[in-house]
Amino acid sequence: MDHGNPPIRRVVIVGGGTAGWMSAALLSKLLFRGYEITLVESDEIGIIGVGEATIPGIKDYNHLAGIDLTEMIRATQATFKLGIEFVNWREPGFRYIHGFGKIGTDLMWLHPHQLWLKLAALGQAKHFDLYSLNTLAARQNKFCFPDPRNPGSPMGHLDYAYHFDASLYARFLRTRSEAQGVARIEGRIVEVEQRAGDGVVESVVLADGRTIEGDLFVDCSGMRSLLLGQTLGVGYEDWNHWLPCDRALAVPCESVSPLTPYTRSTAHGSGWQWRIPLQHRIGNGHVYSSAHLSDEEAAATLLAHLDGKALADPRPVRFAPGKRRKAWDKNVVAIGLASGFLEPLESTSIHLIQTGILRLVALFPGQGFNAADIAEYNRQHNFEFDDVRDFIIAHYKVTNRDDTPFWNHVRNMDVPDSLAERLELFRASGRFFVHGKAELFREESWVQVLIG
View (cartoon, rainbow, N blue to C red):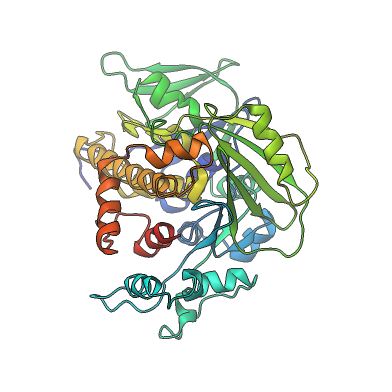
């Protein structure tokens, strides 16, 4: 123990929802005794709660949090997910699946996709989906758990995630968190008190006059970013020039058969529509560019492409794609939407919550709040957001579509240099390299999207 940097004792999480309760559940599980964890949320403030699809890393979170798989599936109406089907992205009528897991045998000097590209040019290769176990299983609505006892078999490499009801997941985690000692306080925050001189957050004041003091504050207040953005004034890096979609409409509909083990993303004239099958309903949403489509037109498109009867009116969400320039400042760490927003095209929202929490645990501060720890947290945060941003932009940039002003815009737009270099290398030689272990999406993911 660093006696010059004694441990903090009071952790205050501001905001509930998925980010707040994921933070509470994991921190209360992993931190040693002696920590007091309080979560403040208000029933008056709504949550977005449309994120329902995950990627395979969610299994690591559930394991660390001590969550029983069967219990979680039952509580959240969850289904299994083998990948994401993309429809109409390259051109109208074309579809492919970005499947989880490995593809073929990597010979180190020769990668499966390079052999496929050569044979495809000669007319001797079938659809790339046919060479992945995950995508083959998804097409046939099949699922089974991977078999780690036989790593030489393709079954040893099957990978998966979940679809679940995000509000039910938060409720499930709340029950676990409170059983692990987390204190939930109902109330609306009306004031944030800061220490004179350095601006460190000392407490939050509720509408009824109660004051909640803390040493470390975790900002899970959503896009408001109450502590990091509004109080500490950390700026926002807007990426709307690369990601023009800035609105979404979400609506559930009745379930239909068969229950598909994959998410579907269907490109429309000025954006795309998600389809997420749960046990009890299907989650749907239309993500679109308000510069190219009116809200009324977006709603009509969404409702016209549902598989079953709508169970509610479409709920609007406005957002600005981008990130906070820092996710940790002074004694405040932002998790989830308070740290940035990227459209849910590759189901990364819940994963970014998870990695933010794990990063906090790995760099957990003492009362001195070491500047080197904070700088490293922010470096990793920025790298991860930039990496996911580039992957999402690539879906738009590599399209052949020219049938609407929206698709003409994204096809011809300039992209970040980091992405432009990768695209040029792939166009020139079919080569793709990850830049390190910190990258979220591996070679197989990039290749499936670039080929698709």
